Length: 211
Image 1: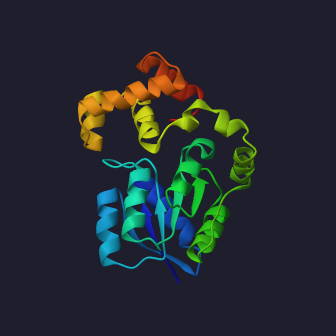
Image 2: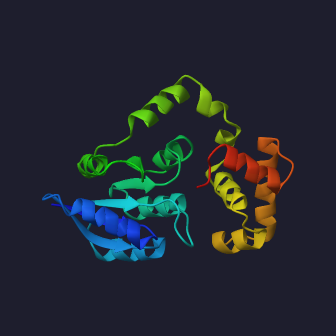
Protein backbone atom coordinates (compact mmCIF):
# COMPACT_ATOMS: atom_id res chain seq x y z
CA UNK A 1 0.00 0.00 0.00
CA UNK A 2 1.38 3.42 -0.99
CA UNK A 3 0.91 5.87 1.88
CA UNK A 4 0.38 9.47 0.72
CA UNK A 5 0.67 12.81 2.54
CA UNK A 6 -1.11 15.71 0.79
CA UNK A 7 0.20 19.22 1.51
CA UNK A 8 -2.04 21.92 0.03
CA UNK A 9 -3.63 24.98 1.62
CA UNK A 10 -6.92 24.49 -0.25
CA UNK A 11 -9.28 22.00 1.37
CA UNK A 12 -11.18 21.54 -1.90
CA UNK A 13 -7.98 20.50 -3.70
CA UNK A 14 -7.07 18.06 -0.93
CA UNK A 15 -10.54 16.53 -1.07
CA UNK A 16 -10.38 16.24 -4.84
CA UNK A 17 -7.08 14.37 -4.67
CA UNK A 18 -8.44 12.10 -1.93
CA UNK A 19 -11.47 11.31 -4.09
CA UNK A 20 -9.20 10.36 -6.99
CA UNK A 21 -6.96 8.18 -4.83
CA UNK A 22 -9.89 6.51 -3.07
CA UNK A 23 -10.65 4.64 -6.30
CA UNK A 24 -7.27 2.86 -6.17
CA UNK A 25 -6.72 -0.30 -4.12
CA UNK A 26 -2.95 0.17 -3.77
CA UNK A 27 -2.83 3.86 -2.72
CA UNK A 28 -4.16 5.50 0.42
CA UNK A 29 -4.10 9.06 1.76
CA UNK A 30 -2.89 8.69 5.36
CA UNK A 31 -2.22 12.35 6.09
CA UNK A 32 -3.10 15.86 4.94
CA UNK A 33 -2.25 19.40 5.98
CA UNK A 34 -2.35 23.00 4.76
CA UNK A 35 1.06 24.38 5.79
CA UNK A 36 4.73 23.45 5.63
CA UNK A 37 4.96 23.62 9.42
CA UNK A 38 2.21 21.01 9.78
CA UNK A 39 3.92 18.89 7.14
CA UNK A 40 7.16 18.81 9.12
CA UNK A 41 5.25 17.84 12.25
CA UNK A 42 3.49 14.98 10.44
CA UNK A 43 6.55 13.51 8.75
CA UNK A 44 8.46 13.50 12.05
CA UNK A 45 5.77 11.40 13.71
CA UNK A 46 4.48 9.28 10.80
CA UNK A 47 5.82 7.25 7.91
CA UNK A 48 4.78 8.11 4.35
CA UNK A 49 5.79 6.68 0.99
CA UNK A 50 5.28 9.92 -0.92
CA UNK A 51 4.42 13.58 -0.35
CA UNK A 52 2.19 15.52 -2.76
CA UNK A 53 3.36 19.10 -2.27
CA UNK A 54 1.89 22.37 -3.52
CA UNK A 55 4.24 25.27 -4.31
CA UNK A 56 2.05 28.10 -3.07
CA UNK A 57 1.83 27.56 0.69
CA UNK A 58 1.16 30.11 3.45
CA UNK A 59 4.13 31.29 5.54
CA UNK A 60 6.67 29.23 3.60
CA UNK A 61 6.85 28.77 -0.16
CA UNK A 62 7.06 25.34 -1.71
CA UNK A 63 10.69 25.44 -2.81
CA UNK A 64 11.96 26.33 0.68
CA UNK A 65 9.66 23.71 2.18
CA UNK A 66 10.97 21.13 -0.30
CA UNK A 67 14.61 21.86 0.54
CA UNK A 68 13.95 21.57 4.27
CA UNK A 69 11.93 18.40 3.75
CA UNK A 70 14.73 16.77 1.76
CA UNK A 71 17.21 17.69 4.49
CA UNK A 72 14.94 16.10 7.06
CA UNK A 73 13.92 13.06 5.00
CA UNK A 74 16.28 12.79 2.01
CA UNK A 75 14.81 9.48 0.84
CA UNK A 76 11.15 10.54 1.00
CA UNK A 77 9.88 11.08 -2.58
CA UNK A 78 8.11 14.36 -3.27
CA UNK A 79 5.73 14.96 -6.17
CA UNK A 80 4.93 18.60 -6.88
CA UNK A 81 1.33 19.33 -7.84
CA UNK A 82 0.95 22.99 -8.77
CA UNK A 83 -1.07 25.55 -10.71
CA UNK A 84 2.15 27.15 -11.90
CA UNK A 85 3.68 26.64 -15.32
CA UNK A 86 6.05 23.69 -15.71
CA UNK A 87 8.16 25.81 -17.99
CA UNK A 88 9.14 28.24 -15.24
CA UNK A 89 8.91 26.26 -12.01
CA UNK A 90 9.52 22.57 -12.66
CA UNK A 91 13.28 22.70 -13.19
CA UNK A 92 13.79 24.67 -9.97
CA UNK A 93 11.75 22.15 -8.01
CA UNK A 94 13.50 19.17 -9.59
CA UNK A 95 16.89 20.68 -8.79
CA UNK A 96 15.72 21.18 -5.20
CA UNK A 97 14.99 17.47 -4.87
CA UNK A 98 11.48 16.83 -6.21
CA UNK A 99 10.92 13.48 -7.93
CA UNK A 100 8.25 14.82 -10.25
CA UNK A 101 6.14 17.80 -11.25
CA UNK A 102 2.51 17.91 -12.34
CA UNK A 103 0.13 20.73 -13.16
CA UNK A 104 -3.17 20.69 -11.26
CA UNK A 105 -5.05 20.59 -14.56
CA UNK A 106 -3.63 17.16 -15.36
CA UNK A 107 -5.91 14.12 -15.58
CA UNK A 108 -6.70 11.86 -12.60
CA UNK A 109 -5.03 8.97 -14.44
CA UNK A 110 -1.81 10.97 -14.73
CA UNK A 111 -1.81 11.76 -10.99
CA UNK A 112 -2.19 8.07 -10.16
CA UNK A 113 0.53 7.05 -12.64
CA UNK A 114 2.89 9.68 -11.23
CA UNK A 115 2.26 8.59 -7.63
CA UNK A 116 2.99 4.95 -8.45
CA UNK A 117 6.17 5.72 -10.35
CA UNK A 118 7.57 8.20 -7.82
CA UNK A 119 6.69 5.96 -4.86
CA UNK A 120 8.80 3.19 -6.45
CA UNK A 121 11.81 5.50 -6.58
CA UNK A 122 11.37 6.73 -10.11
CA UNK A 123 10.93 10.23 -11.53
CA UNK A 124 7.90 11.60 -13.31
CA UNK A 125 7.83 14.41 -15.83
CA UNK A 126 5.36 15.20 -18.58
CA UNK A 127 6.18 15.03 -22.27
CA UNK A 128 6.00 18.84 -22.37
CA UNK A 129 8.62 19.16 -19.62
CA UNK A 130 10.83 16.54 -21.25
CA UNK A 131 10.87 18.65 -24.41
CA UNK A 132 11.81 21.73 -22.36
CA UNK A 133 14.69 19.83 -20.77
CA UNK A 134 15.95 19.02 -24.25
CA UNK A 135 15.73 22.75 -25.02
CA UNK A 136 17.90 23.49 -21.99
CA UNK A 137 20.48 20.90 -23.03
CA UNK A 138 20.68 22.52 -26.44
CA UNK A 139 20.87 26.04 -24.96
CA UNK A 140 17.50 27.03 -26.41
CA UNK A 141 14.46 28.98 -25.26
CA UNK A 142 14.33 28.53 -21.46
CA UNK A 143 17.98 29.39 -20.90
CA UNK A 144 17.51 32.51 -22.97
CA UNK A 145 14.75 33.77 -20.69
CA UNK A 146 16.18 36.50 -18.43
CA UNK A 147 14.61 35.11 -15.25
CA UNK A 148 16.49 31.82 -15.75
CA UNK A 149 19.55 33.68 -14.43
CA UNK A 150 17.87 34.45 -11.10
CA UNK A 151 18.74 32.46 -8.00
CA UNK A 152 15.90 30.59 -6.29
CA UNK A 153 15.62 33.33 -3.67
CA UNK A 154 15.61 36.08 -6.30
CA UNK A 155 12.97 34.23 -8.29
CA UNK A 156 10.88 33.80 -5.16
CA UNK A 157 11.06 37.51 -4.33
CA UNK A 158 10.29 38.45 -7.94
CA UNK A 159 7.05 36.45 -7.72
CA UNK A 160 6.16 38.04 -4.38
CA UNK A 161 6.73 41.54 -5.77
CA UNK A 162 4.62 40.57 -8.79
CA UNK A 163 1.80 39.69 -6.38
CA UNK A 164 1.93 43.30 -5.06
CA UNK A 165 3.47 42.36 -1.72
CA UNK A 166 5.31 45.19 0.02
CA UNK A 167 8.97 44.94 1.13
CA UNK A 168 7.75 44.69 4.73
CA UNK A 169 5.35 41.86 3.90
CA UNK A 170 8.09 39.99 2.03
CA UNK A 171 10.47 40.65 4.91
CA UNK A 172 8.01 39.21 7.43
CA UNK A 173 7.26 36.12 5.35
CA UNK A 174 10.88 35.27 4.60
CA UNK A 175 12.34 36.38 7.95
CA UNK A 176 14.76 38.69 6.19
CA UNK A 177 15.38 42.36 6.80
CA UNK A 178 13.73 44.98 4.62
CA UNK A 179 17.22 46.10 3.61
CA UNK A 180 18.02 42.58 2.38
CA UNK A 181 14.77 42.49 0.40
CA UNK A 182 15.72 45.80 -1.21
CA UNK A 183 19.11 44.36 -2.15
CA UNK A 184 17.45 41.36 -3.79
CA UNK A 185 15.04 43.65 -5.61
CA UNK A 186 17.96 45.68 -6.98
CA UNK A 187 19.63 42.49 -8.24
CA UNK A 188 16.38 41.39 -9.91
CA UNK A 189 15.96 44.73 -11.65
CA UNK A 190 19.56 44.61 -12.89
CA UNK A 191 19.42 41.03 -14.15
CA UNK A 192 16.11 41.55 -15.94
CA UNK A 193 16.98 45.05 -17.18
CA UNK A 194 13.86 46.49 -15.55
CA UNK A 195 13.34 49.86 -13.89
CA UNK A 196 10.83 49.39 -11.08
CA UNK A 197 8.34 47.09 -9.36
CA UNK A 198 5.62 47.89 -11.89
CA UNK A 199 7.83 46.51 -14.65
CA UNK A 200 8.54 43.44 -12.50
CA UNK A 201 4.77 42.86 -12.25
CA UNK A 202 4.34 43.27 -15.99
CA UNK A 203 7.26 40.93 -16.72
CA UNK A 204 5.86 38.25 -14.39
CA UNK A 205 2.40 38.43 -15.95
CA UNK A 206 3.70 38.40 -19.52
CA UNK A 207 5.82 35.32 -18.77
CA UNK A 208 3.07 33.56 -16.78
CA UNK A 209 5.16 33.40 -13.60
CA UNK A 210 2.19 34.02 -11.31
CA UNK A 211 -1.23 32.44 -11.27
